[in-house]
Image (cartoon, rainbow over all chains, first blue to last red; front, top):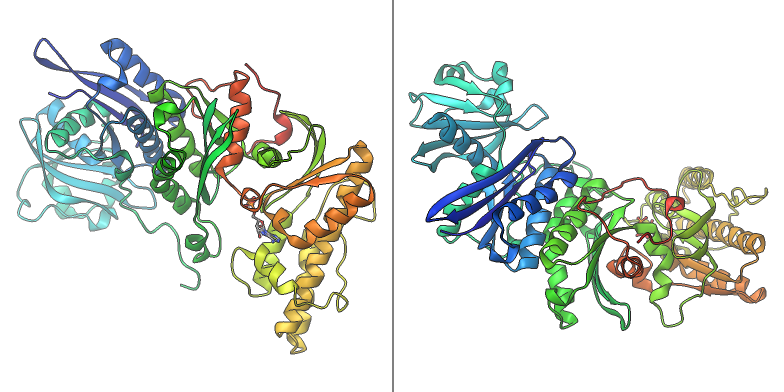
Length: 233
Length: 343
Ligand SMILES: Nc1ncnc2c1ncn2[C@@H]1O[C@H](COP(=O)(O)OP(=O)(O)O)[C@@H](O)[C@H]1O
């Protein structure tokens, strides 16, 4: 199994996690802090602490990963910058992990949930949302990660009768969601945030699937691309 | 000491390699001007996204052109401010990540200190102390420079920066963004005697500037020509010429005063507007008259670039100054707060 380091700054939380192997077993070491606007101060010491705790150097990693989004634009770029810089400096491949997939995995690992719709508040009256089927730590995406207003949220086609669970800050917009969605969601965990400890697990699978890339090719995935309006439109 | 310099404070991604013994080894720049031109100005979010796409490829390009590998670097400097915070963050994060992986020191430096010291990259650099005129899209300042980190603000614009006034005038004259060079080109064909625009704040002592009144004057003149049906190619060129003459005159008068006041004989002119040919001509005459000398960075180091950041970073890193593990992004940061290198 590969040794991986993952970073995340996509929300108010800041986190880092290391996947290592001792005595034939996988082990995940992690740091997590709710630290709004403090990512620039907290992220690098977390990396240092993890490497020290595991007693390894960056050059012993097989790859690095970061929460590629969706999430706070600036946060995504902080994590991307640090991860790209580390990977480029250490000459290692990089992976981008969906923050929504990480949320889904968090719900699955903690509560053994199978059908999870992660959603994050995207501001401007919209949310980022995905839909995942989770089995034995494996995730399958049932609808592409998207940005949309809560009023337009739908359950994934063919899974309208499934018992879905909502996770993440996006579910705070519950009141604005269509009745069909509300009826299909049996439970919500608004307080779960994307975390590197889930990303490092997802990244391990992505790495095994050959998804590691040169660092500059692994860009944030913002989902919201309309951020400016051209003259005269 | 070989230092990588990274500039991402606004709409150009600049990267360079400076060696404290051999000098500048390589530099590369990616300008987003054409992208922002579609929006009539810099869109901060788009600028930040583009830095994230372009930075590593530029670093690779610079290393390749100097025939060096990343392990040959001894330090990394990046622009920590002032500038657009999201854009600054890209350079800061990447610099810190890379420096950590390579186990070398990293330092966030001041963008305007980079501009101030950009002439040091030339073959005949000015000696300390000197007076510096910084004229860019965001700044118009006169600074007394005694040494690295020893800056005293002599005067600055109380409203618009000179470059900003050029850009706004360009809009009034229906020229494309960025406006400075376009106004200067149009002014070449203008009649210098048709209009005379005010020279703001030159009739009283002091080294501060103001360009917003000049902007209003330009607008009124443009509107008058339009009403008279004379807002043709020649009319616009005449306005451009009157505007340029007024700005250049104002800058020259204040530079002369700053040299008098400090008793210094060296004048450094930096920032985007220092590319203006008429300004350079007038400053040459003025300095020659008083046995002083003017220094300019080469054209491509007048505007934002990585070389000036690599240079300043190298001087400070060499003196032992470095960041701790916090990435610095300081959108507002007065130049006068800078200090000599802190080891
Ligand atoms: N030849 C010129 N004459 C007058 N202004 C110019 C000329 N060339 C560039 N400029 C002005 O310089 C500014 C850009 O300089 P730069 O140092 O990049 O500024 P900033 O980084 O503060 O925007 C713009 O306002 C532009 O219009």
